[in-house]
Length: 233
Figure 1 (cartoon, helix red, strand yellow):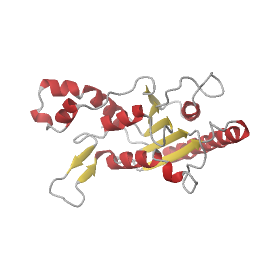
Figure 2 (cartoon, rainbow, N blue to C red):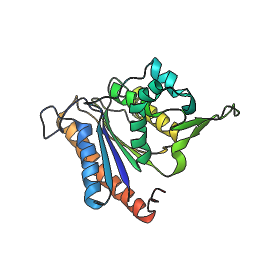
Figure 3 (cartoon, rainbow, N blue to C red):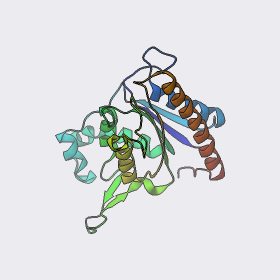
């Protein structure tokens, strides 16, 4: 049985094409999760809407708490890290992390950056080997095969690798770096482009992306069927 962590980061409510001013990235995540659950109803799901309920921005107290060894933390430190612990627990439990996010000003929304800052944490998702000056970081989420599915909506066009705007896309590369740093290296990308252009270009991009979502769900479900997820000890 697999577990999915579904994260929506768009500030928009609803689904594009269905709701007024709806979100294209939420459309993609809805399609992915719905199709997954139809094919594997036994799998479980955790949903977190950080677009509407963003995680806290890390503070001085957070940094002081996170970088204090667990055995030396005071009670206020444990309380400070409560939100981070919950978000990390959700991530650790996941076999597939589905992230729906728009491209805002060439990068990720502030809410998604806040989530990244809460879950990339020493002692929980990455260890530091101070005796190794060359490769001191040890990703803790490399303990089993996890997948991340990044479903993106962009206003412009040409942000895919090789496109004329690719050098200005700091969303997917940033996510790949942060997720890989903690051990999630199997990352899949699907994007809708042309929201600002609209018309046939956007419609074609939406249809193409939905087709890719369908194909990716089928591909991953075959992989999970052929290599069952070990049950937690």
